[in-house]
Length: 189
Image (cartoon, rainbow, N blue to C red; front, side):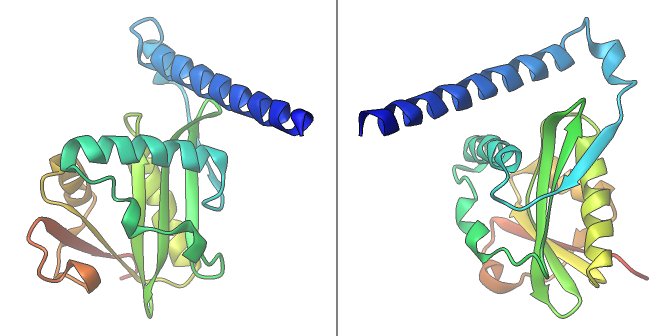
């Protein structure tokens, strides 16, 4: 029993050190000394499942950010247990091997996917992520995408509007919810 708890403590310590290292790397990327290097870097992405540790760490950042903006983490709107890799997609974006953005799409209805858990902590990574998610959704046969966010989340709303999404009718649990805005986009024309 003692060995198991010491292994668990060791795993927690490793996890904590990984988070510290990741935070240090991100602070470096945003420092004045590193700014010239960041512009030369290329984003990369991986198709993953929601149990991926990088995805989970970014979603934890997203939850914290949303809680500050909207007083709701948004966690109740997506269950990784419901993820179906035959219909759904999950992507993590990396900059210099550091995870900087994540997002998911899931089946909504015939030929329509819903974007969920979109988050970026690095300039430019959100647009790259959205392009990759949309391409992946098209590969899976989707022709349109929908999403919902809080109206008070101006940064997100403006991001989607800049990327050719337009306000659409509320759907599902968002019908009649005034603080939410639903957006949609044709992926295939």
